[in-house]
Length: 140
Image (tube, rainbow, N blue to C red; front, side):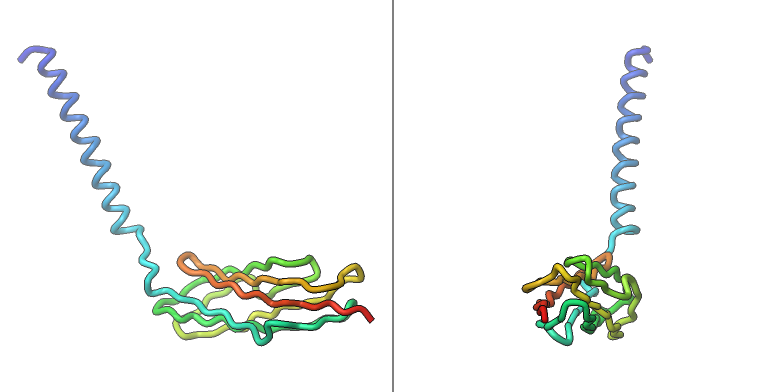
């Protein structure tokens, strides 16, 4: 066999092996690492959608999180709103059909006045839910 033919054969063989290994890795990744999120679900319900709060006084709003999916899941909680709002806990796990109470603490500072939309977000790897709570800040 001539050197050029041998070189062409080896390069073709290497290309086939590289292509084959890439396909195997791709399909192995899909089988091993893919997550089917169709059986995951989360629900989020606030006790109140509208809250009156006074400057300098705290107010507590409860939100119920329910794992409505078929599998246990881990959740992260975030909050969109002014710096005088706090949500606890910020992470937790739930088994299927299990519920958890989140506590939204609202304590408007002296500059606050008017209406504020506070958004609570609950997110896992597969699902998320958001709820808005309208806070009306009253000054005495």
